[in-house]
Length: 206
Ligand SMILES: O=C(O)c1ccccc1NCC(=O)[C@H](O)[C@H](O)COP(=O)(O)O
Image (cartoon, rainbow, N blue to C red; front, side):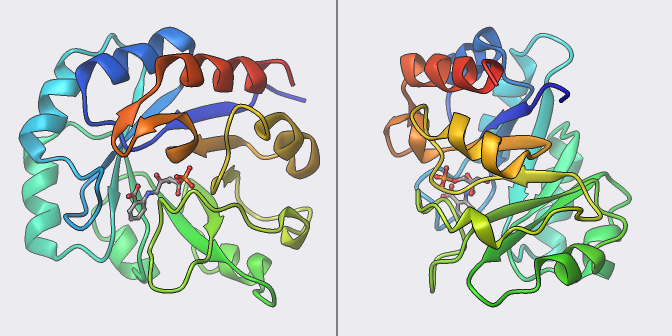
């Protein structure tokens, strides 16, 4: 099995970004969603990215952002990958001509295979927990047995992962990558560096 990649999402501070990179994270995520307690401005994200060493993937997370807002952020911030975490249709995701991943919020009865097939241009599909009325970053896990084998896209497993459960999650789902936010925090938007290290260590032991 090839190495499972990891993304630390909801980064708001330079020191947390550097701690994630130092621990071995492959990607860091910025939440451009004003209602989130982890929301960053484009100025904050730009300053954090400027402090990064090379070869770290920078991901911008959006929830039903307007074209104007998204365009302004893309002009200002050097993002490698877009993460669409709302109800964006495939045409909208594709329209920016940037690599993107699409988040699906999973609940019982969903046809995950069909949902993956609906985004053929996506670099990967992020599977997160469905919680009514909350688009993401809930810290809730979902029933991993709902994920079928042989999906058409690389799977990024998210939702309620933490240093204690991530090894089991990888063993059961065999994702391409894992994504965590709340499970490595000291408080909303502030990462706990020891938890980041423990998380990446658990990912790498798989
Ligand atoms: O983090 C948020 O506040 C947020 C708000 C709206 C949509 C998505 C959001 N976060 C998503 C993530 O941080 C991750 O991609 C993923 O869902 C993991 O979250 P968590 O369950 O906290 O580990």
